[in-house]
Image (cartoon, each protein chain N blue to C red):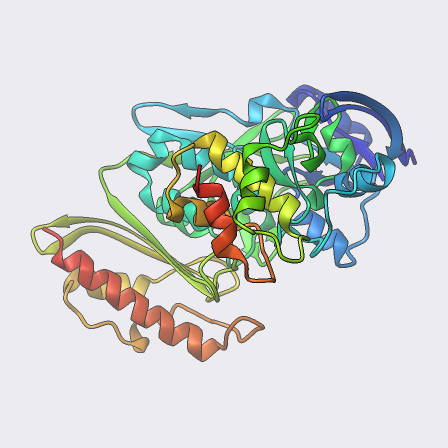
Length: 275
Length: 152
């Protein structure tokens, strides 16, 4: 295995000129267990950790731009994220343990494209956009256009994720995760709600769920019903049109559906009770 | 194919230079090449924390890192925690609180404890428990471990 650790973005793009088959390494917290469990080592491993341009967090009046190499610990300690993006901050608190949070990055969590990636559900619900760069061009694309299937992302060869852009709003938000134990567990289901209330109604409402479909999905049917009547009792038929859960080692599809209904009811009732 | 690389790291205050295979995990570098066997392997996939070391001031799982990634860094292992003849406060507390049963998780637990106390010497029990989430003890000795980290 050839190991490369370019020190700048231009050095990285030079490397892409000569190397076509490569695996990108950042925190390694998903990659390394894969190697441990039989994934063959790549011919070329490119470590991005020395590229400091990828780890900055920049704030403007309208948005925050989070460098792809920002670790979960750094997200958790960032005051802007705590203030404007509570659901994302909450997800960092539920994310594995300290040792993993010190290595795992926001870019890695996105590019690993797990249906149960804890940071992904909040990112979708805040309308995150991804800045992708190549040697001579860049594009900014909604996150849902990039994550296509479990473990699959629509990045071109020679293209990398530079940063994640989140628009600042005055919306409130929350993140709920159910795992088989309280910590160090992969989500059985998780969801994020971003909302703004106007008297008893929702002026803004976006609800996304994780681990109940091949990618993070929007509970559009439920959103529409709640926008119409926020006091609606949530039943399975309001989420079934949007989800497609599977049965796996962690839970059955039926359990995922029912527990999602119950947890959503808890949170929406609590939101309705807020003044 | 270039399957090895020279690295230079500072381990427990001592500069070390070695040429190692690129696929060598930091854990194996520490245990097999440097013969520092206080760092343990249990799960090998980042769940249990037995292989914890302090890399560039942060606690990490050495089983999830290639040694080549640490080139130029400073690393502390459990062997670097005590002064020459004197245990650290946390190590002494582990003895006084009888926190050790089989002992296999303890190097990682002590390092996690050191990190918790460094970040906030007055951490509450709940904070300590939350920050110990990445360290698993299968003798179920958590109470006495938390006692040792808390009580100072």
